[in-house]
Length: 141
Image (tube, rainbow, N blue to C red):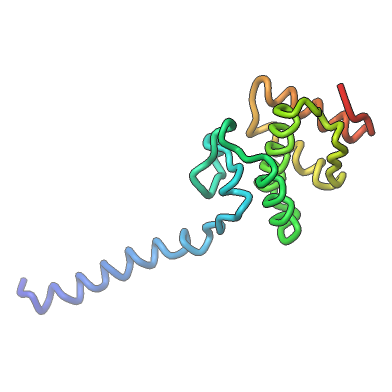
């Protein structure tokens, strides 16, 4: 086969490969400030690199996640990340929700589902217990 006959075949193959990859690019979620600040490195749904718990700047992370949730309040990834920042903040400062951090009840309901899949062991028990206390109106263990 000469080069003139191969060129259309090569172009068709290239266009087919590009066409297959386009839906994945369109479906990709944009990385948010919340993702940059407190995205969990083991989260299978993360859209950024992830931040280890020891490197999370909790004040900045809480502010970023609250801001992102104002525009995307039904996003379970952002809800989980906000709760992660709040728990790390409470753990580091020994406050355990005594600072009056109150999340909207709708946010809490959405987060409980996300937490069951994404948090394990100690943090799962701590997060879910703290969220249940918060929903019940209690502020400390």
